[in-house]
Length: 494
Image 1 (cartoon, helix red, strand yellow):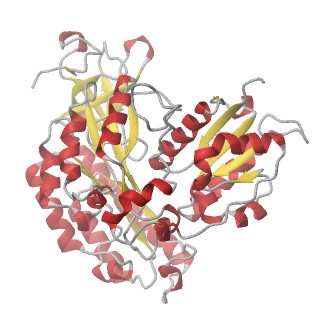
Image 2: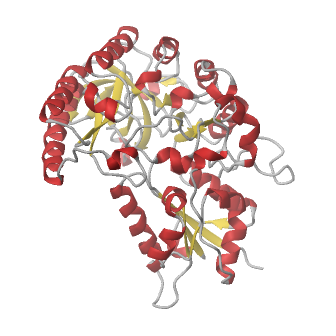
Image 3: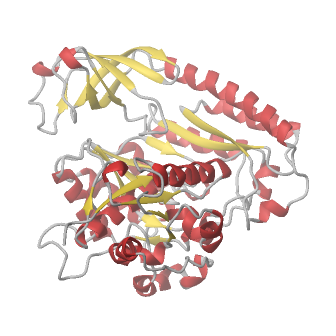
């Protein structure tokens, strides 16, 4: 029987990217060949995002595009929807999107190869029936460890013993993209109950990956040429609470930074209300751990934050930032904020602007509120009109653009460490990201100089900016530093 081929199309966040690579790994283990081009595949798997309305639209568009790509009329390849949108809406999505030959939930991931076999053979597959995944595990986090083995947790999957490799991690993963940066999943799910967020209902309760699994996968990634590990989850500050050790992340970070070949470890998705002094100290002072704080503030008005079922406000947040910058003066901080939440007043927006001006954040994502099915906020009084949300979104976005550009300018003259991700032909420079720039969501740094290669960590002095992007010159030509590819820092000068 000829080898079947499948392409995996990924929408959404870095967590979804890890899930896609798990799906690719399971397909490979089941005898499928994973190809990068949907037009060359026998079947296409679309890993959807179900977070906000714009992401849902993008996911549906991706399914429609995959259904038609490279195919004459009446002879298109099968398309299967998986991921958050599929898990969240299941049979409803299948009815409203007949272009998808199947809509599968997380429970189907373990047998994804067999499910695609069914699709190719024309065997009917009952659409996934959604349920609140928070109810699948015990309420007490410390009781989840034993029960989690029978609940599908995307990004946590193990291969059966007879299929697992003799060495390396048992986790199922097949990298779909190359490059020196890779996401590494810490946990799945969330125990917080933010009134605007539906993620816990379809991602489930918070479950940490075991320390040994995370560390083994880090070694495997490093052996494959990965130089920066980006730790992802729905809430990284909760890592270890269900394993009986809320400070497990503080011990894990130095261990990951010590993995041979790893130049940088970056933590994403931090909850301000859960930031501990010990965690800040480890992130600020551990060699190899980026002093990068991805803090989900969401707003600064205490009134709005309480309606969001979140904590803090301008005073608390500025105090947290003061602690971070006292320990790591060059630390970078990014965040997301929402405007137009039900009941938000002009005074609340002014408070948010006051905070943003004082906070000096390096990057900020600004979003207009949209009511999500099944969330508490969708039923709140005081809905803000779409036109008003649009005006507030434009106003705060313009402020953020000005503030973050100024923050970048403040870094002119400083020395940054840039992980090179691309080199211009002819040795005319390179581009990559400093410790203060996460992949996809932040700016990047252009490095002027010669002798650089993808994967090098280069010391460079910032000489100019373009918005949030930096332009820097090598402190020492790469050839004058230690050997390229050694995992050492290139350009050891001051």
